[in-house]
Image (cartoon, rainbow, N blue to C red; front, side, top):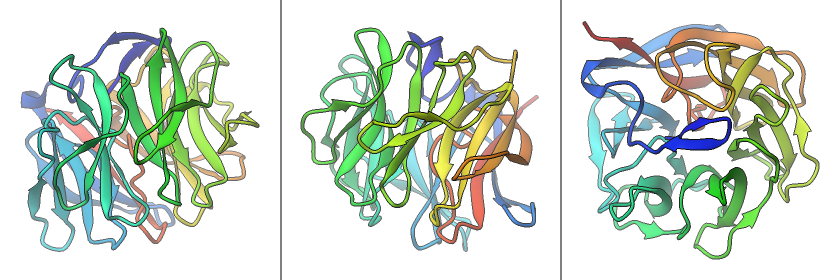
Length: 301
């Protein structure tokens, strides 16, 4: 998680702005064709950011620094062994072959987020980004590259790095916040969100960083574009203008999950909900591109 104000880091925290002890979380899925919403589970604590596994049988989410696997048939939860990476935030991403999972973990030494990779079913995490803070968001379809947002010299930009570690490459260079990079299924583009034109908007660029193009032009702040596995749609979350600073994506807000064509054009609202941070920070499309998993919240009495 990041709390930023116009691209300047305010603080780094584990989890969310929601007070975990006073939060009820609702894990849900929406059918993009019918609009039907299914309540999958209710939790008396904060959970965030569901990933749908490639076999369509499980959702991976984070809570209290750990990762959990939720079985969609039995509705049972099990913790994933992440070793010493026990301060994970909501930036976890599954590898294209679903054998590994990458996480953003706040290291004990300085409390700053770095990216690690570990086996999908749990195991020893391997450090990928030595520099911090680094916040994971995307994994290239060929499995070779990770895309992430990172603060370097006071500016937040989109970077890529080999999934096995190595030298990072900066893809954006504009004032303010550039965040949420995610690859298209064909690997040709990276979608991201940027505040460079005033409000937070959805952008797209070629995988090498060229051809940066604004894709939404809304009077709202739009975050975290997620491309459907079939490449046809892009889902993202939108905050109302004036509710938040353009460079912030807090919890406890009335937001919308919106859907737009991947080629550009107008959006339609799939869900209006109380949430924000933690709702769809990561790609949560079902493998058949039919449903999107998300989390809404209620403040407990």
